[in-house]
Length: 419
Ligand code: ATP
Ligand code: MG
Image 1 (tube, rainbow, N blue to C red):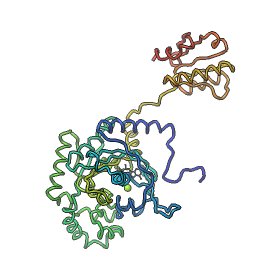
Image 2: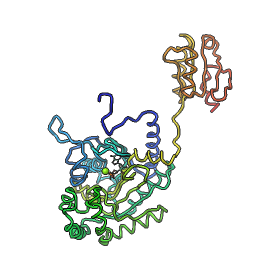
Image 3: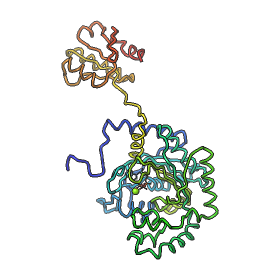
Image 4: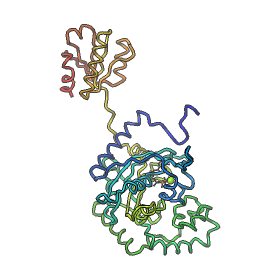
């Protein structure tokens, strides 16, 4: 136990972490081009925030949250997703008085007590975007196009986009009646949770993963066929906007998304490579959320991408990831004088952005050279007392074996000139 990570968590080791850094840097670049600024919120929040913000009819809140009482007897939960915390921050920091729309992004760890499966962990990571203050479909198009540009910049191809609309409280009220009429005769065949949903939020029944419920929901009326005029115009605007950018999508009447607060647009990016559910990204509009959490009525739209699944997709598609910066020069030393000299030398090289290493284990010269080779150093220099005294040394190119005598105090330029 002591030497194992808790179930559902894992270390990100150096052989993987450079890939994360690469993805995160691409995210930051794309977000900057789109005018999105980073927000960082706490890993834990008051449990009520998620009950309200994610919705207490969701699986996340009902089954998956890491909730505990802190020493002050407050109910605290680890964030199961990023939106609720950002909405809390938007309200708490009075962001409604900033120029609108407010465009934010985050890269976070999130926590859900889930059954383990491929691409499904208990600690996982999300890149998400939230925008506030714009109600028309063009910002929905903008965030989808941001995802498209991120995928393009990572070299990903053919990640399917499904879109749908789940209407607003006005059209959903009428639709809910239709749904209830549809489900009422089969209530005894639906799972316990769906019976509960039937009373509180029948639309969520459509999202149930239980086989017996899926069979029944297959014939249920679709919200997309029951939109009010405003919602249907919004959906047309979304499709037109995507068409205009040449972004290919598929309308899927069955996406309702797991979260309670969605209105109008919902969308997913999916791929077979990332596990059973196949979702890389889920997003949509949640015009009612800010108000439901105690803020001013504010339209909002966002998404979250699972970074583990994004990396799985990159791996499956075999997209190239730039390698880690290699050690450029290894200074091998013989004796104390040269070792002291080398200490200062690598300090100066590093200061000038040249990755440099020297021996730290008092290895023999032979062992040092072997180590330099393992590190993949491009150049080596062997320093003995003579080299230090005469300020001359032999710079060896490890890739092609070329050797050149150089002035030691000019080593930086010698390396830079060879790049
Ligand atoms: P799923 O259908 O896979 O359960 P979800 O609907 O619960 O996903 P969201 O809450 O919309 O997912 O989260 C957005 C994204 O976060 C998902 O599309 C997925 O990429 C990622 N994600 C969600 N849960 C996990 C998890 N347990 N492990 C890894 N990634 C996850
Ligand atoms: Mg889930």
